[in-house]
Length: 475
Image (cartoon, one colour):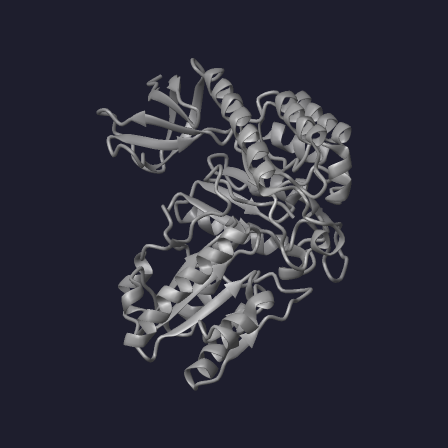
C-alpha cells in the first residue's frame, strides 16, 4: 500500500478537512450530518460515498458541527499523529454532545477495527464504529445508536466496491474529482496496516467507472484522478468471462477517450506493477497527465527486503530510467521513510543517493512509526532512536527541498497548458492551476476574461521551492 497524500508535502497526515456545504444543502432536510476526513485521498473519496448513503437515508450535509445531528470522523491509521488528532477531535465532539443529548458521534474507516473497543467502551467517545466496507449498513446502525445501542460493523469484504453508489461531491470546486477504481491491497509491506484495515484487493467494474467519469464531464468537471492503493494492479474480468480482462492501461485509455479536454491523473503506482503498456498509453494521450507517484520508501536493498517491497534498489532505478525513456518530461514523486527497523547510516546514505539519482520533483517524507498489527511490529524491533530518525528525516527533507527548487528552476521559460482550478490561496487576484507534472502554478488574473474551469497557456517566469509563478500567454 502507498500513501496517497498529494497536496501537502511533509505532514505526517493530511489535516482533517470538513466539507463546505454545496448545492445539496439548499434542499430541506430535517436532520444533518457533518464529516471530517483524515489521511489519504481514498478516505476523502469514501466520505463522498458515505454522504450519498446518508443523503439517501434523509440526512443533509452541513459544514457547521453545531447544527449536526450526526458527526463522523473518517479516520486514518497510517501515522500515529493521525490517531492522536482523531482522539482529540472526538473529545471536542463529546463536549458538544453534553449540550445536545441526541447527537450521535461515529468513527469511520481505517481505525474502526483496531480501536473499536477503546472508542466505544473504555473511553466512551463514540456511538458508532463503521469499517470501510460497511458503509451500506449506516442507516440501520444509526437507528440502533439512536435507540441507545452501541452500533458496530467492521466486517471486511472481498466484493464491496460501492460501484453502484454515485458519490456526493463534498467541498468540490466543480472542476476536479476523485474516482475510486479499486479497494483494498494485496501488497503486504511490513510497515503498512492497510491490508488489515481495508481488506484484500478488488477492482471495480469498468463500466461503472466510465459512467461516473462521463457523468462528471457532462456536469462540467474537467479533471479526474483515478484512485487506488495500487492502481497498476487494477484487473477486472466479467463474472461470465465473455470478454477479455480490463487492465489499468486499457482502463486509462478508455477514460482518456471520453473527451480530449478531460484531464486524467492517477495515484498511486507500485514500482513492481507499473508497466510499459501504462507508460505507452500515457505517451499516446495528451490529456493523460505526465506525472507518476512512485514510492521508493528506502534506497537500501536490505531495508527494502525487510519492508517486503519486492524490489531492489537497482530494480527501482531501472524503472525510473524506463519512465524517463518513454516519458522524458514526466514528473516523478516518492514516499520516503527514515529510520525503519535496523536502518544503519549506510542505508540512510543509500536513500539520499537514490534521491539524487531520481531527482524527484517532490516527495512525501516521514520517519518510521510502528503501527500495531503490522508485520514489522510482529517481526522487528523498532530500534532506531527517535533522535536519529529525526536527524535523518531532516537530511532527507533538506535534500528534497534543494531538488524541488532545482526542478522548478528548470521550468522557468517553459509554457504549459493548464486548467484553472480556482483562486490562489494567497492572492485572490491570481489563479491557481497544476501543470501536467502536478506542479502548482500561480499567475495573475489581470484583465483576461478567463474563469475557473478554463484552459489557458501560461509561461513560467519565476518559482519558489513549491510553486511555479507565471503569466497568461495570449496566442
